[in-house]
Length: 77
Image 1 (tube, rainbow, N blue to C red):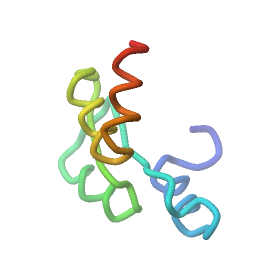
Image 2 (cartoon, rainbow, N blue to C red; image 1 turned 90 degrees about the vertical axis):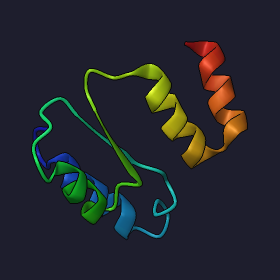
Image 3 (cartoon, rainbow, N blue to C red; image 1 turned 135 degrees about the vertical axis):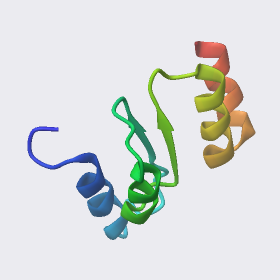
Image 4 (spheres, rainbow, N blue to C red; image 1 turned 45 degrees about the horizontal axis):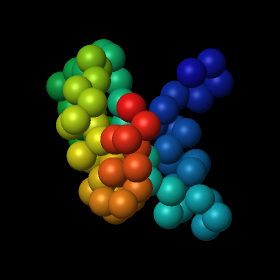
């Protein structure tokens, strides 16, 4: 990201009362040892890597948003 990285963007989202409850899944193509821990420390609710395995990602979304919304997403993709 050009101005702040994803970890800092997540910290900002999670530090604001208006957006604290928004679920965040850290998603990276360049997974390095310790990145999952960095994501959780920054406030991410979950973490995943690219290439995206759609079923795995949707399962994480299901868990964070609830089954009904996740099922709606499955029907779209």
